[in-house]
Image (cartoon, rainbow, N blue to C red; front, side, top):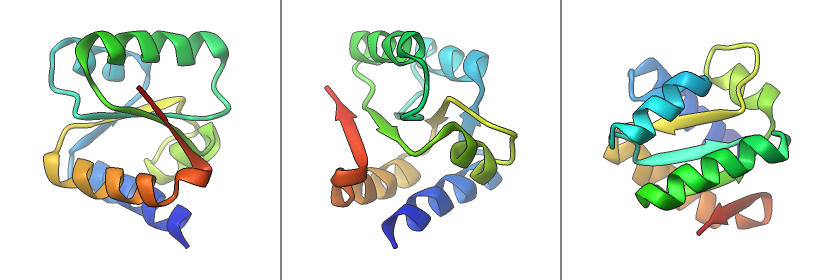
Length: 110
């Protein structure tokens, strides 16, 4: 199932030190230009979604809405997370490919 593959890739990226989560870390990585991909939980508040969408649009960082805060947190070793940021090109390519293949359950933000 694609969902498991996406969340598993996020977990692997976290273990490899190529993924950061939490509001402050995600925002910092975007502003410093190190963010390659941002994933925001679909059940995040409208304000949170708008904040990340604006930041990512301004800095040309791809962003997807995917999964829930609980699932993102569980697979990245936290209680719950509204957003995660990828810092590695290889993980980013693999995740974008899976997210694109699974578009019925993910939404790309342009």
